Image 1 (tube, rainbow, N blue to C red):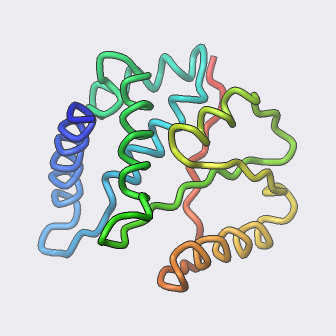
Image 2: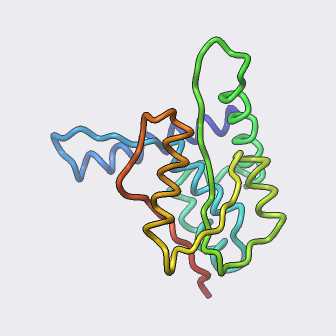
Image 3: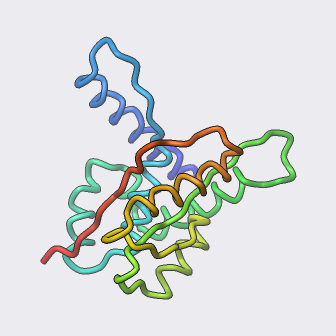
Length: 164
């Protein structure tokens, strides 16, 4: 888990530097942990050309360039279990969930691995024809998981297409 934390810290500082170049003199708010864990989940489900492209970009994302991708997945599993432990004296929770287009097929092994490593279940939705309903449902889930503290009017999608 230490290598994951070190890689995430490096990623956070590099991303902050890039964001500050574009937002000079402005406040910048982002979650490096959320971004890196989302990218790692994408890596978990990728194969072939998509996986190769992610690994090529991984040189710029230290979390993804750990010696072994499984090291990152295992690190997130340990870290998320520790963060979300209900027996601690603090309240700190993460909320991860995958949303996929209902017409896409997802491998059972990917769904199981996402749940195990990232505590992220998959819900398939009709993004093609009912994107507004999907947005409301996703925001409802976020509101429930954050006890009403964070509801956004827009949803950020990380789109992945198979590249050949």
